[in-house]
Image 1: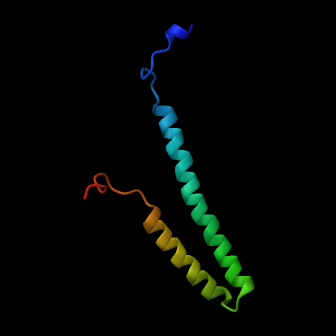
Image 2: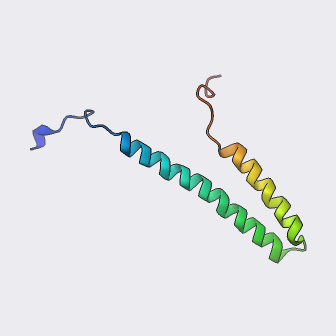
Image 3: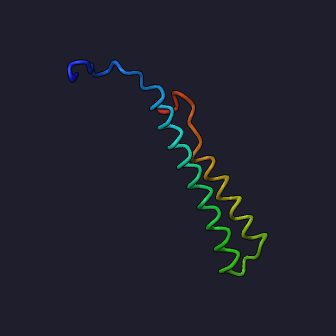
Length: 78
């Protein structure tokens, strides 16, 4: 049976799609969790108040979105 395996002949499209899904969920989920921790930390542990906490959280989400979004193809070339 070991002779039936040939390296590089297996279709890995599903594994590749699953990997990219898990990495995307990890990346965006981490941003959402960080925003939640920031919001509640500022809200309950400082004198920032609701609007200040929300403003800092929105700022974090905007910067995080800009840094974590997928880059266009060919953006790596210098």
